[in-house]
Length: 455
Image (cartoon, rainbow, N blue to C red):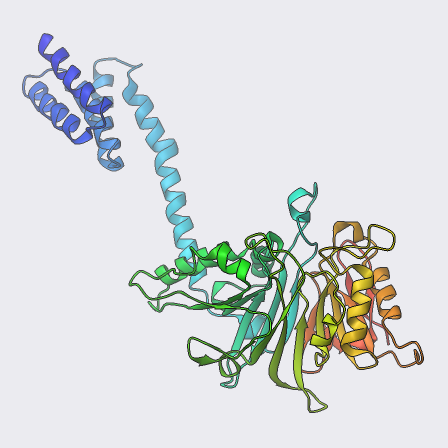
């Protein structure tokens, strides 16, 4: 007995000091000694199992616990700890490991799902994956989705490219509900570093890394990211990511107001994505620069419209109104305009967002009297039940005063259902999935907006 106590004392000391291999050796010697002398080797098997378990060798530990349990039953020690150890392994650990294995297999299967972009959305489509703005999804007591936009364009080589724009809260969740996945995203455009425009970026980059580690073709996917100065500072630690063999996973291009971006890593953007980017200042403070370093964008695409013009898409991003800023978008036939909120104080414009007056002024500067499909988005939840009315007010006041008979400007409020076919500027009717000209669309207000043909 004294020898057994000494062996246990040494074995316990090793376990207490995390020296599990040494503890295993002690209890292994004790096990063989006791069995050869027909002694109580079950206790040694139990503690040897613990030492193996703590090294992560769970199957081997389980075999030791079984040996201990069999001897405990033989000696009628029904309350011995070996039974609890076996039950833990069988009821909890092994089933959990099996779930992890199945989840991993499911992840790898999903990551290797075929690219569905052309089948699920098609080329030259703009989809709003967006509901509420700013921090609404953070503090809202009910379901409140943020999001962004998703744009598909056919490039000069005939390929369909997917571009995520300002992917904020819930973007990837909504994106997955459309039947799309990480393989369908080729580029990300980010106008500024606030969470409601970037929250899903880290998740997308995490899935990109997993895709590159587990795709069956053993080919690395490279994501192009175009972002403001604040975005660069916010994500700089992630932008140097590489795959398992050291290949770069991300190309980053800084969006500098006044610049035209026409290439990335030596590749022509018009050839690769079907657009070039003109960058303008937006007057909205970024967190990571503490300056108004946000940007607005004009995407000049290679898509020819029926009138012979090439489609141009304007993106205001978040911005307060500054006189003349709308002139940056004079050539845009489609304009994504972020309202943010309504004016809170009498006679004062908003300090960080356009508001109603800023939207009207910008629209008049951009395309007064010219055809324009403007999409109003970035609503605070105070707009619930009022999005259609607010859009109508802005649309009415942004028309030319002298001739309001020919309404060539339409301002459509955005919600999760909004889908624009860019080749002919039609909007998908919610109930029938038929596309109609944007100037024939009326809005049915509800928890989620519906887009109806108003023939």
